[in-house]
Length: 288
Ligand code: G1P
Image (cartoon, rainbow, N blue to C red; front, side, top):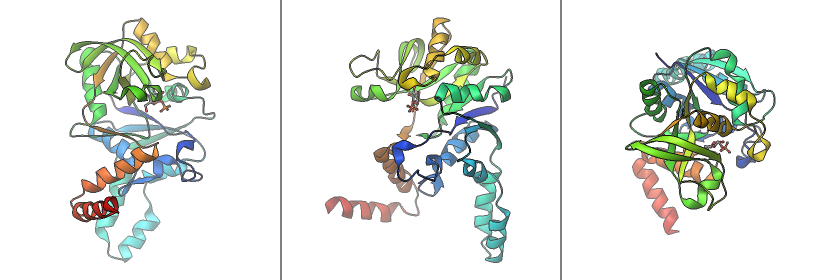
């Protein structure tokens, strides 16, 4: 069995990044020289996923356009002799097949995933949250796909977060059966600090099987009045059918200013063409 599709919910309002996101979708804000969403799609592509299902809304068509040809711009670049840049923008258009589904009301992550049901068929599917960035030698979603296919079980990606941040995440209670691999015994969305079953937080990477949809269908609004994916995952836990994998790599929450800025610095420092200059400028800035 192969996993081809990845659901990428991108219909959120991005209120955490206002005023920058007043008219620009947060997924299109740049980190280094690419929009946030391109890193997500690059991770999917590196893991062998070929079909990206954006769960989107009417104000975010620009995200689909980013993964399409821009022939007018290509002609301008051709006239200017900038053939390398033509390749750069063509490559983005040719990364993946794009499927777009409208989420007509923003009712939560679980609702967004449910919106993609019609195009998922009977196959397992990956889910990647559109502003959660994971960088590392192995694509994070690929780490989960390997386990899901080997064990025939849904899998969520987790990292350890500080105790005072558990209330920002879905937290798992896990039983470690191999290094960094857990049988999930419970999941809870955004528990209060001091009330979480662990510090293992889900970070927007999931591999799910078609049975998730029947659970999502039954979910009532949960934390924050939203249809929570975490509540459908808890239904899988009750059937003893959920694994978690501790992800390797560096994670940034691009929907949060300090994290967004840190991701820019991280990617800038990873670019040999600007590393030295950026380091010098950062040192000057830090020394005031
Ligand atoms: C969502 C999920 C949460 C998960 C988080 C990761 O929350 O509901 O379980 O830990 O993404 O980023 P949100 O950040 O949309 O509030």
